[in-house]
Amino acid sequence: MPIDPNDVEAVAFDSYGTIVDVTTVEEPLAEYVDRPKLVSKIWRERSLNYAMVANHVGEYDSFYEMNRTALEYALSVAGAETSAEEREAILSTYDELDVFADAPEGMERLHDAGYDLYVLSNGSPEMLDTLLDHAGIDEYVEDAISVAEIETFKPDAEVYRHAADRIGESTEDVAFAAAGWWDVPGAVDAGMSGAWVNRQGTTWGPYEIEPDVTVEDFHELADELDA
Image (cartoon, rainbow, N blue to C red; front, side):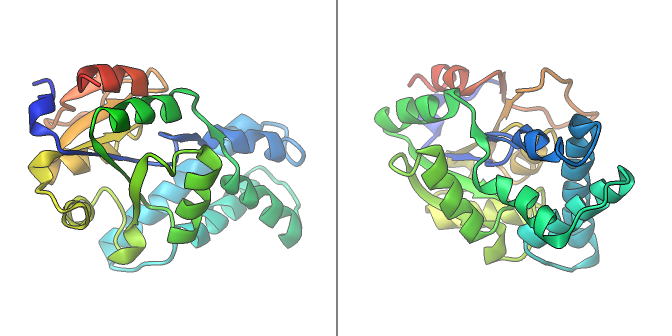
């Protein structure tokens, strides 16, 4: 069913891939590999896989560290020989990822309509501080909530319940928006309304759980919430 704006007090957003474009890393990767798009994809998928396995085995390390290890793996698969300094330079791109143009504009609309906005991310607190400043959305966002606070990664339901507690609302009063096909099901399972921002034009996974709404960008989300 569509999201009823009357039932939503706050909107939480994923960060990487939703507010900022993780494919920005293709540019620095191009200096070291022949197929930067493929290596970028391997890097991203490996990083997410590390986080999901960590949940299952009860381990936790910061997303930044997992991202570093995933980068090393992706470069090794590509046969690229890089120094530690070069890898750190590539990794630092995460501090200046391109911002999707609709993200600040859509968040401004939602903010002006009276919604409390939050960022909920696997990223470390330091990463999120940098992201809010770089994306130019800090004036619209009440707070950034990192999984580091409970040392469990998304899409574990505990993360979304923790976010609702931090927001000060029940999960039923929070809408969660993310581009990740793996992220929205976790939020819906925890009781939030789920908005899938389908930036890649892909298909939904083989879940019985469905997003409450599917949009292409934040402007469509703002329309759905009457902002």
